[in-house]
Length: 473
Ligand code: ADP
Image 1 (cartoon, protein in one colour):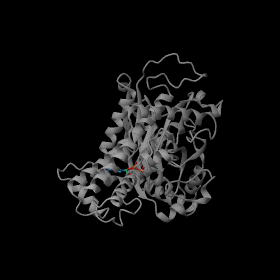
Image 2 (cartoon, protein in one colour; image 1 turned 180 degrees about the vertical axis):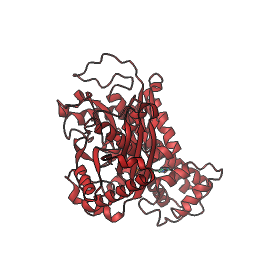
Image 3 (cartoon, helix red, strand yellow; image 1 turned 135 degrees about the vertical axis):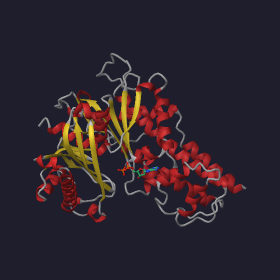
Image 4 (cartoon, protein in one colour; image 1 turned 180 degrees about the horizontal axis):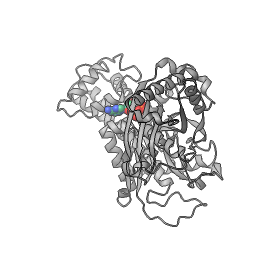
């Protein structure tokens, strides 16, 4: 009985430490807007890198023709072909082929990696050519390359890799022009393909969002990791005054996974997770929000409960294993609607090696899922409103600075494209996020903000940008 009380106390403590009342979320909103400002003011001015993407115009629906895209960013890479029919027909069709990256290539040489990519694309192009003889007339094909790693962009179609993340480590690539490597591999394989645009996955998502709805001002990805980008006014990019842009604006890749603020509700579990991660003190926001980590936070809470009580039996070896509980399984437990929480029991048994869990403990486990997910979703929501605040779309009139006088606070419709496996597949996460955005904005402004889920935006958007930028070369 005392052991049960201890577990309940641990849950209550955890719940309190994770609390995100709207007052606290508004502090996160303000911190996000302030950090964005700092990151735009000077290089290294904030934990937010606020990378300039060179993308100064977004697809608007008039694009026509067949365009290709490559998406390299996680464990899978994707090859795409998109057929655009202009304003009346839009995206006529798109084909996607997914391929796992052989693990040895993730830590091999840039040549090996790009040869593999070029070969896969060549096979894909040839297969399509055989199916569809129209394509034989295409002499030079245009491609958008989605490369979801931090890049210092030197133009729309060139950029230098700053560092690898997500398990990739090819030392000879860091500091090199990513497009040049890819273009060289195409030439070597005899593939007539021109790399017209190099884009971050968030930028691809923004491009597709904007193609579908011209009020789209930002894009957020919440999958294994998390990041966001948005359209900024050129004159607000203080660190790069006199930036030549055709539209007076530029897309900024925030790299928001690295955001940090003392207002974030951090627990002992977060601190331990971070300390034991391969990148301590890095990606603090991401570690509270994204799919890679939610299951792991949850595992740490259950482990602690198991260590401090006997209600979960002896501490199992699986429960001690880092990343033993993947977020999709956590979601499955959270969304278990059976009266006896049958799935919860099964996952605890099969995945974490905890058999015969009584119903009241199963309920407690669902409670932990709820706390972890609610905090993640509400913080992501605060991040989104932070972006809207920075560009004066949150109904408050923007961040007041001595440089910009606010002349009008009239509300305009703003759309944010949202993509990623966590948002798309975890219903409760999505609902918490959507609700929190409305709650933070308040009744008056909330109807003007639309979250628009996109699919394959990172890839399709890159093909759209290839179209936008190749037609004007
Ligand atoms: P990536 O971010 O790896 O490029 P995705 O956007 O598809 O790819 O996101 C995949 C991530 O989404 C997974 O790592 C997982 O954390 C999360 N995810 C996928 N399916 C679910 C699910 N059903 N419930 C919760 N999270 C999920």
